[in-house]
Every structure is written in C-alpha cells, then in structure tokens.
Length: 529
Image 1 (tube, rainbow, N blue to C red):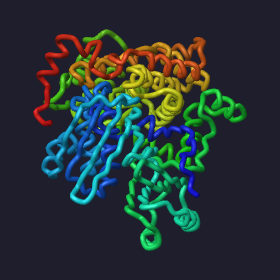
Image 2: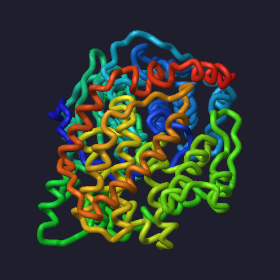
Image 3: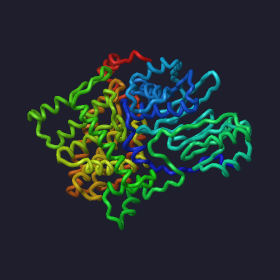
C-alpha cells in the first residue's frame, strides 16, 4: 500500500530559490511574489477555469492589515491569471481580474492560524469547487499545506499530480510503482477525500493517464506545475548545511566561500559549477540594470518616496556631501534599487523584496568603486548566497516571523561576506564578517509606514550596507567575531520569534502607527479593491 504519511524531507535551501530570487516586481516578496506563486498553483488546481474566488485571512495574522498595501492581492490576482512574477502588467492585476470576469471576495475572520501569513482560497466554476490553504514562508517561498481538506506539502519545486479517488484500491499503487518514475508517491486522506499525490520531475504522460482512467475508479486528476526555478529531487544530497559542516568539508580542499557555494548549489540543484556561475552572472546583470534604471529616474504615483538617488549622485559628484568614499557609492546604489522596487520595476529579491537593495547596493557599489569585473561581482554574490542558505535553513527571511532582522539584517550579513570576497579575503574572514553583521542587527523590528515597504525600509537597507562595510573591514583586519556563525543564526531565530507581534510587519506598532504614517496611509489608499 502507498504510504499515508509524508516522508521527512530535509530542508536544503537553494541559493536561487530561497536566497537570491525571485526576479519580480512589487513591494514585497513574501507578500507579492509568494502570493503570485500561490495563485499559479490555485489556477492549476482549477485547470485555469476560475469564475469565483473567496480569499480569507486570519484577523490576527499579518495579511489582515497588509494584504492590499504590500501587494498580496496584486500578486494573488496575477497568479490566478497565470502571469509571471516579473510581468509588467502586475500593477494592473486587480483591474485585469475584474475584466476576466473572476469574482473575488476577500474576508477577514478569526481563524486561529498558526502562521501569520496564511492564505485560504475557495475556488469555483460551474463544474467544480476546490479549496487550498497556503503559507508564505519568506522571500517569495511558499508551502501549500491543505488541498480540499487534505493535508499536503507542496512547495512548487516538483511536477505534482493529484489523483482524486472514489475509493481506495491497492491495485493503483502497484500500477504506479510499475509504470512511472516518481520521487514520492503518497496516499492522502481527508474526511471525505482520498488523493494520491505524485511528486516527479515531469508530469504523467498521456498514455499513463488514459490507462489510469480506464482501469481505476478515479474521480479527478490535477496537474500542478512547479513555480520555483530550481527543482528538488528525492535523491538530493548536499555536502553541508551548517557553517561548521562546511568548514569540515573544506578541511582538505582550501576553497574560499564562493567556491564552496558552487559546490553546494551544484549538488542541490543538479547543476554544473559552470551553470551555477552563469545563473548568478545573469542575476548580477539584472541587479546592475535595476540600479542604473533607478539612478536615471523612476516615476510611479502610488508610493511615498519619489526619485531621490539622482540628486544624491549629482551632489556626490559636486563634492557637496561628506566624504564617505566607497560608502557613498553604496548608498547611491541602495537608494536607486529601492526606488526601482517602489516604482514596480524589475528587481531581484536578495533575500527579500523589502531587503532587495542592501546586498546588491553594497556589492555592486563597492565593485564599481574598485573597478572590478562582473565575474568578481558574481563571486561575491555567490558568497552572499552561501551565507543566506545557512540563514534560510536555520532561521527565516520572513519579517512576519522574525522582524526586519530577518530581512535587512540577513541582507547585511550576506553583504558583509560578499565584500570580503571582493577584497580577496579568506574564508575565515568572510564567515567572521557575516557573524558580526548579524550580531549587530539582532532584534530589528519591521514597522512599515503607511503599510508600505518604503519607510523605514530605505534607511534600513542603507544601514545594512553600511554595517556590512564596517564588519567586512573589521574582519579583514582579523577582528574576533567571538560567536560562531551557526550560533548567531540560531539566536536570530530565537530573537525573531520573541519580537512583539505588533512589530513584525503587521502595521500595528512602531513608526507604522504614528500620526504622520496614518495620514500618509489615508492619502495613498488605492481606489482599486
């Protein structure tokens, strides 16, 4: 008989899934990009035929107060329409879903959800109805936790086939084992529903589907495409998943951090070292373009802050600023990237959209000042990605769970390792820089003004880059980080969970409840619901 419980899958984050990505538009990866991915899976569950959607948020969760202003609605609608996260139409998705004759109803109820970013969807058309519950786990990553009242675990990293059974039949299990190649096959039971879930590297072919329908008592079959760029596999093994394990792995290899990142991601994603490097080079070029677009000037009505980086560049060139040297170039790049994000331009979440500027601003700003190549920037970004993997595996990037230490704090730790790499520092120095940077940002809260990911996010991204530069130089001078990186990340997780609910991206505390914040919020209320 098929197993009815899910096997314990180890948490092996991918640099391109979990840490540096997705490529997207919108104010928040955990709201907008994640919601879009949830919407894409919901669309597949309905075979792209959706007439009505009821979206329900827990009144005590973060989405009850932020689903509109931080892009959850926009992203979810885009996903239901089948769009990509970087689609230029994304800002118009509320209007587009109306034009597609999909009736949307949003409800806020006391549901007692355990996770603050939980989505409950009921979807209907004239022929069928389905439901799903999903969580946004941070940085655009998701998990579908229930489909039609049945507990599941779909992260969007497999081709998923859901076979709805009218009755249990051991023969179907034998047939599947004999005729398909799959990573996992489960029998899942709800109160009135039985589903066989198949996780594989491709969908079932047409002949297999026809044979299943002819031979077995099947009610329905759904094919759900992956939404992540790097697939998972049951056979996935990684060389290490903690900093301590990485150092042990490297004991006889003498690799630097970016080279160890190649080893990790190559094993995680079944990619060659060259493919990993090329993917990261493409990411770096996207980041460079975003920064240049930001400096050139952005326009977007529905935001708090307008174009400011151009004036910073002019005054820096005219020596009208205090001499910050490389730091001023970083500030220019950080602010330009944040302006692109706030104007619905294309960015790379690194590790999130709210913290999209600290790492690339520091890395590309420093590399520009030093006259370094794209290859050297790519090496630095790989180093940052490796630090991010440890954070993703053992803490969180979600401000709703860990406050802004999880976003800008993580970005700062990653950036400090990147800067040491640019300076040709050692592995030990890269790790020390990351440890010191993360120590300096413990407990940082998330309190978005007017529910927007702009203020104080701009300053916190600049702070992330500044902190990274200071810690990189301290590490290059062999300052002692004292606390090992793994222990700092464990502490991040513990501290983040202890931050008050009001100060974890709920717009219920901190700067978000000041008089000025509330006035701006009223001024910026969207006419599209």
